[in-house]
Image (cartoon, rainbow over all chains, first blue to last red; front, side, top):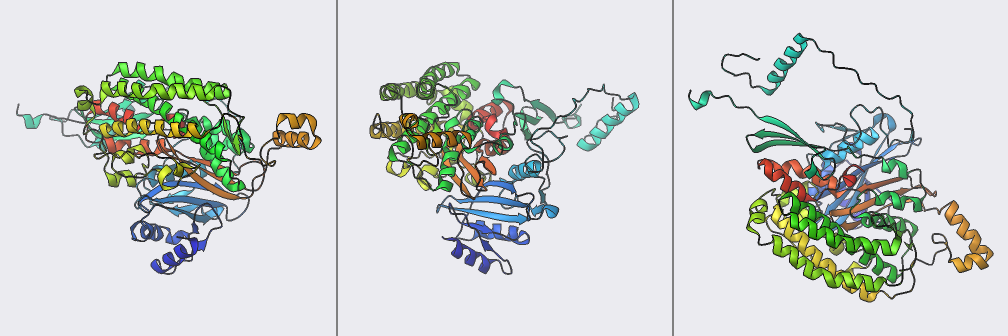
Length: 190
Length: 395
């Protein structure tokens, strides 16, 4: 299928969405409006003429300082036909958020975490949007073009853990509360 | 005391990141009910080196050694997919001889990588002999790398526009010797494992991935083929002349660890078939790069005698070459699955963005699904069977 027929089929299946054909020559590329991304993804997965059953890759490109700043790029694969497709969502730098696709393709889970980690693009309704590759306490998102390539940081000095006996006991209680196993006969915690 | 009043609780065990069976620095948090795994979380990122950020500062030819260090067991799959993507942007079609040499090299690479997989996986389920035998044969493949490039792990021999230089004298003899030796050796490994009741007990029905899970979790590659999905990039979207080679794609049935073993062993036999066909087509000397003065430096005898060639040589090695603005993603079938390099160019001599599609990342993501409900001893067998390379996961 060429880009024009894909755009036509998608426009018929998702009313109200304004799709733009992309200029890439290696595979058909469709630029999807953010608010119709999930609907489009469901059509592409379930419609018998598409059957894109694998989400191969999610990544982003930062065009800073141009606007719209970000492009989130999805590479899709239909293993049975076989066919390839690229979806793009363009995002302004101030509104770097897109709906998550992990309900459509479970493989989006870690791929979206990686994009959040490296670009700071928020995936709404993801549920578990933590850093994947960078340390948890890293400041900033390193693959953004305004993130410096080399930074000098002060070495972190180890501080001994300061905890009173009461806090220690309270931690144990809180931990048991979370795990929900306080049914020990006698109720004695220690 | 009646049994109902006994309090039981699940135990949380940290496995890795320094566990010897985690193939590097994969960390698993396992929730255990006795010996049963009732929950698992995988944590990655300990080997993150920011290669993609570094690449954005480099010229195109300087990227080749960097991407080779991502998946360090199949270095040339990385550089191959990068070179193919950039060549697509440049609109270059390399000579047939270059295509056959590249195919030969990446298929030797696949054998090399599968040998390391078989060695480590075999050792982890108790077959130490397999480990020793496989590493013995792997040495032969590393010797071929050393012959062509002087570097055993990361040859950087596949370049944008072709190869680094022509094949060295004695290449055909060296490869023929390895290809003649391998079938008997593969039969030897199969004698040790395929019908070994201990190995079958450790692997059959363990770490099962259904077809639907494999597709949903993006596991295109040997793991999906073991689950019965007949998808191979070399057949579906042929690149570098794969459509002219005669080979089969092995398919599994159940998607367990044993089927993954069978699929990968059969892939090694098929790789040998492709290698033989490719070697027959390669003439000992001939074109080793595209005749495009934008990308490939002129030959040395011209550089020494012609002014224009000298200038061109200087420009390519100082400024590099520019790539037209655009984007390309050309996937290749690596040993672990679909490798692909998404290259975005802004029309300068440095890539704007390079993203490597990592098959190991997807298998790590699927790991909790595979080990859920199994025994803790099976976790080791499953990690071995998905063949993760942490350098590829963390990049």
